[in-house]
Amino acid sequence: MKGSMKPVKKKKTEEPELEPLCCCEYIDRNGEKNHVAACLCDCQDLDEGCDRWITCKSLQPETCERIMDTISDRLRIPWLRGAKKVNISIIPPLVLLPVFLHVASWHFLLGVVVLTSLPVLALWYYYLTHRRKEQTLFFLSLGLFSLGYMYYVFLQEVVPKGRVGPVQLAVLTCGLFLILLALYRAKKNPGYLNPASSDRALSSSQLELLNRKGQEKTKGFPGTDTSGSLNNRTAKDDPRGSSRMPAGSPTKAKEDWCAKCQLVRPARAWHCRICGICVRRMDHHCVWINSCVGESNHQAFILALLIFLLTSVYGITLTLDTICRDRSVFTALFYCPGVYANYSSALSFTCVWYSVIITAGMAYIFLIQLINISYNVTEREVQQALRQKTGRRLLCGLIVDTGQYNRAHL
Image 1: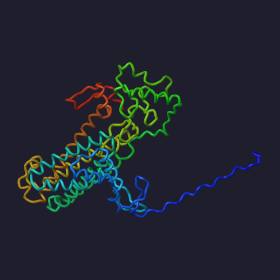
Image 2: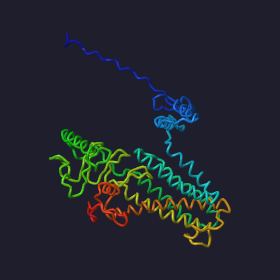
Image 3: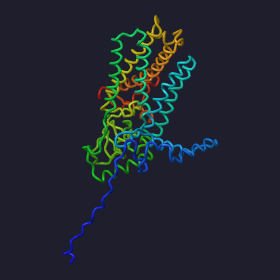
Image 4: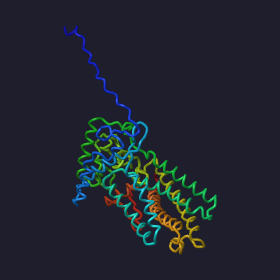
């Protein structure tokens, strides 16, 4: 009877087809259909926060996080086949930068206060997001919008004065496009390590042993990062360096196992805790491009810095030569009488000082990069050597020689 019975085929339950979304509808984080027009409705956390603020009561950090999550989920723009989500971190630079620069143009003292507070606020936000290990588009938005807004002010306030010729304007415009092209190239894949494409196949027993040893080392070894990956890049005189990998492992002495990505990293590769992936010859995670700087995009990153510095200095020179005539660039930067007599020259002068501050910061990064390249070290290796106290400081700490890799061998 059992052999003659045919298995009964179960009918597949037909799933109801979802109705197409209109341009203002979207699926929220709870999986429910919502509408852009209802962005201010049914927000209990926001209502509770407003009530506590009105009654002068403190807000819990969890409540603030839920409010920010709700705002970021409901902040959308109408789009085809459903409203698209807008990253909330790109909005503050678009609104605050023009307001701050225009306020700084009203008076000299206001300019000093505003231009001093802007770097402080940027550093505070950087350390806030860096401590939480969160990706943010704030600095990428600030950089791109600063380029566009400085160019707009230059066209509106400086070019009409007649001191800038068409050739000079064309050179500045070409520099701007080259910056964007280099940034686009630097934003690409920095050299991510893909576990699926790794040619170092390990057995299951080796994987379990590596994971167990990696977890034990992360608990007690000070040279391991918080991502849980086992680091075996120690000084040459460390007797434990040769015993961190099991016998018979196909890895070399300068390779280590990443428990997060489940792969064997080659030498000088690191796991980025912000991107959540390993990068070949990782230098650092750059917030200005919202990506890592690694083996594949390091040259483009250096090129973008160089072009930006040359273009910025050239634009500053043209602007100061226009609003402060018959004075050298350095003198006009600190002494330009009558610059606040009209609003156009005051705004141009404020934008010049804002560009000087940004250019000085980028010049410092460019200098550090050149020094690291000359010593054949990456910024990640420098920070690791300073934490483990294996590096040698030179020139008042500006240069850090790790003494780990041959300077003449890349």
